[in-house]
Image 1 (tube, one colour):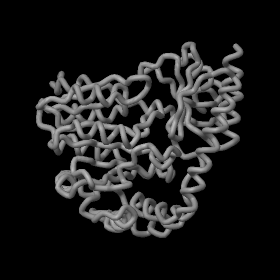
Image 2: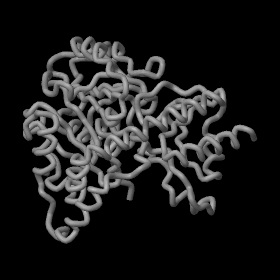
Image 3: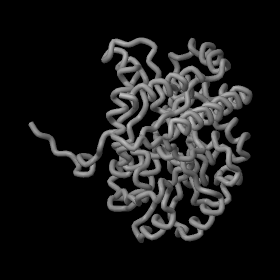
Length: 363
């Protein structure tokens, strides 16, 4: 029997995650494989997270706290907003899906850069909306191009700052100029998954002045700077009317108990966060210097990853590096055939990456 499915669902290209460590170890009979492909935190998470999660394990026969009260409370205090302005998600991509399903009717449009995080497009299509793609200019978000594509059907605009995969940013002045041109009934979804790593004070940070514009929905995650990728927890800060809609339609236990407890503990350890950010900056600086010495151009970045132009088929280099036990990300699926993306690792991992890259490029 052949089942009928939605044309929009049939058109979805599945999200491809970075290759898992275990898969590469099995495929090439390797040990000590390093993964620098998924923008993860190389130093893990705070010891306080481990302690908190261990303490709560005996209660795992109970359902999670549906409202994530403790986590919302500490986030509300941190950003000087009310708890009613917060939505907690199973990763920030959970909230992306809620926004699409909450605010798109069939045929409504959502604007986004091309390329960008694939979950924007997938979420819009599963909500039977229409994703409208606006190509980058010089590896950066084309804000003027987004404005030109706004129509009477536009309901959402997705902005990623810093931008993945290129690492580019939008300044506060650029965002203000852009937002003035967006109609009052269009929601601006500002995805700030990598904002903690930004070093340039000119970069727009939507939570420096939260809720000043009711159209802005800020998305953040614990997966990157806090090192909680495996726990799957993110959050959104937004106008209470928008939050009420998302909380109305989200799954009642969308964030598990361990994730909630881990996130609270992570927020309480400011010293570990500073260490995480410092390690990232040191890694980016090391990689930038080494790549420059090799004559390899890398895009400027304000994130924990960078894109480098090998001026050759990057997918072939990616495959050869896998054989050496180094997992990075080929950017061919993003339309950048000669680029690799690599995130910072520990000092040893960064040195291993450079050594492997030198070896492959000499072949």
